[in-house]
Image: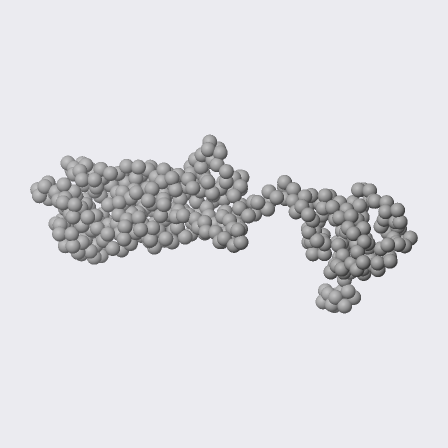
Length: 461
């Protein structure tokens, strides 16, 4: 499995949560209005990327949409990966990049500091470096034994003292041993310190101060944070950075949380680079951090599948649904039918479709009676006209088909109803329009509620 596949699998929970929120955002439609920008910022904040990072990303996307004249929300989301990658702080390559260094690993209990030290030791030994471990976590039970196991796996030497010894003295002994054996990379595991305890933080400041004064190697202080803590991890990083002036971050347990965005929140707000991320329990699951690959694994690609049916496209996802909704709104704005929706549906069921489907309501109303009037002489010339299955709603004639004699010699009452008389005088356009609108209004009237139904609801309410 490749590096990107490992990250993508490890961030699957965070990605699924973000995509769900994005799909809800896209359900509102593709318009780039103020509601879209507010919803995008809220979605990023819910993904634990932090308020400062979310605001910066949205503002950059808004500027890009204006400069490039982006057409819709989907064009904006195509730029989301790049903006997330650009929000990370760059740097940190010199810490584990091959140059001599002494690295102190700090953090609260349970973030995975000891395991991280062991995995990095194995990785650097495989790269051909001379590594030395120092166990300055002298308070936690079995901390020394745990690091000894990792030292044996990596095949490196470890400096330790009895449990309960002064952590600063262990660091001092480790530096002296590194100078004696010529180690070019020293990894020191410190005890977990709760960031809310001022006394414990001062003790940790003492340890870091001793190391920086005694060591001849460049000293780096790296904070290990647990991604499952979410925004609490951001508060931890603030306190540790205030006390120790951190140099970099390592984010662990990204595979066990839906809050993977916390890595971006800490890096962006504190200006600290991320040098490693943990996406699993295996020794190879602690990998070098790449902002572009992390952003791609976190955001993923939104589903854009379409089903072709009879020459038309039917979407199965939020994007096609939103586009369809936008097209319906555009149709209403550009040319809405004059008749009410209920009347339009009833007319469509009773009357034949007009010759031009895209015409407006007035043209449809005029076309139907004119066609009926022009067809009357043809029916009269036939000896045996074929009966029609239904009469158009706009025809103001009786429901039954008239006899041939009636067609040849219309009665006087036909003139009263608006039908041409003996001299075949045609109706004017205004008269035809009035007849069509009157027929539509008659058809649109709802049926009166029956006494039985009214009695039923009256009895219950």
